[in-house]
Image 1 (cartoon, helix red, strand yellow):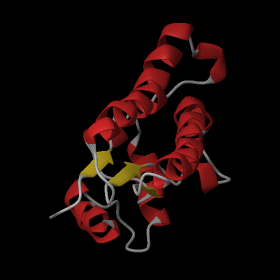
Image 2: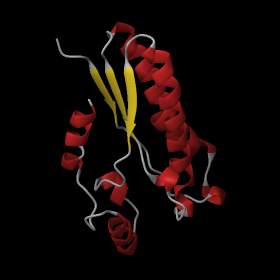
Image 3: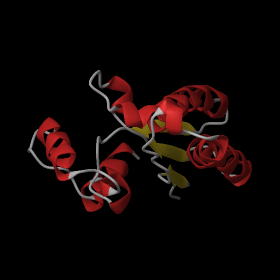
Image 4: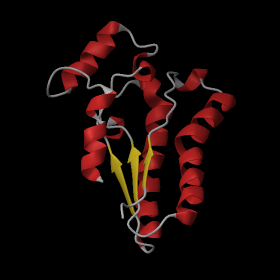
Length: 147
């Protein structure tokens, strides 16, 4: 029998400086990036068996020292996801479930490209070993391998 697999990949990516941020934007981002995944895992795992694999997809932005200032909200909340994964791994581990995070770096999606000038996209591509931003279909084999 195959284990249950849950992959959490939904995200919002805001592009504002602190001075331009408002409470509604913060709430939308925290709901999508932290609160939603937490309570989705809580609900989904009630019926899941030992052997369940839970995979969060996150970002490498938490490890980049030359981060864009406008990534404040996104990177901060992905830092919260990192901590969430560490605690959930312990919490659900006692039930025989595994919680992991993969951080593939930037992925070439409409969300990633939204509002970014071409020079920034080129700079991000230069950070990748192949000098390009991978597409979503290149990430799914990574998820399959981790499971």
